[in-house]
Length: 205
Image (cartoon, one colour):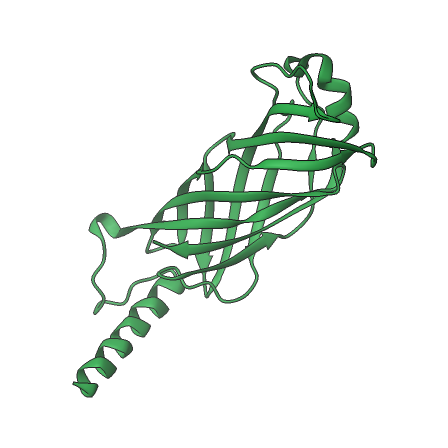
């Protein structure tokens, strides 16, 4: 029984090594058309410098991996809209809901235990309050220019298991659309700008 478990472990390690290299060896079963479907739960946070606040991230990402090249296409989907507390202008207790979704298709590359993940992300704000009073926010309060998050692996990433990613460079939040209504000025003053970062952990389902 111990021998059987050992052989199974060796086989799993071999398959993972082949995937990480971006190429399947002849002895490892490949998905049809040399593409493999992978799905991950995503948890983490995005730090917004203008708010001096971390926005929780809960999402899934479904990946279509080209086993020959290591390139992948993906679909990133938020699974929980966080309610975020922050200090407007550094002093006024404020709260809002932060929704985000792909602004364009996400994609990336698996190579030799490393991941590069490009995520164009639109951000939508809802339910803004300041000092306990609700403020008017339009139905489509979004970024005028959606940011693109460029994420890279923190340590070895095993496609069949997952790993941790972080932004390889800070991203910038543009000003917000006029659909934010009378709250546009307040939102711009407390969020637009650079030096924003993100870190996430992907766990294979």
